[in-house]
Length: 226
Image 1 (cartoon, helix red, strand yellow):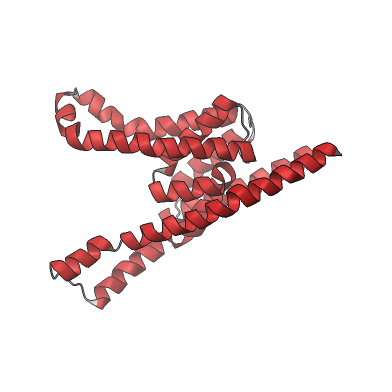
Image 2 (cartoon, rainbow, N blue to C red):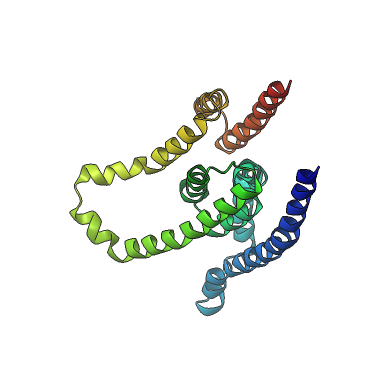
């Protein structure tokens, strides 16, 4: 009984001392970041005089909405079970979730023995994502300054190998999850390959994979509990 009360106390403290404050700061920082994205367009408009017509603005907005509307709702649902709320805030503010933030979080959780979806796992993952932002910023800055010079001296086969960086990272993530889900992971991987080859619109492939993974994961979870 005491363990139940201790768990309830921990949940209450976690919510009051961490989650509530994190939501306030997450909303503030993402709102500021969203407003700052208008600065380049306002500079071109007000300082340089490049003003597109409202019809062109509407056409561009329609293209973006048609391309990303479904992903806007579906993608956070796919990342949330692993990254948690704080990871979602930092991930979408910093970007590069599949290639940098998610692998950093999963590696930290595996190294510390934390389960994804738990409060401890969320805290460990959030620290890992935060550190990945600083490391990523340092290397991106270094690459921006010296990248061209480095690429010029590298052999062509090394330069072409960079095209496989993201698949290699995602392969490592899949391998880590395969240890715990030897049925779910290969099944979802096979479904994703089929969806990629299927004659579906590009905008429908990723949401379809997310929704199918939800349903299959829920079915497997329920079957284990029986």
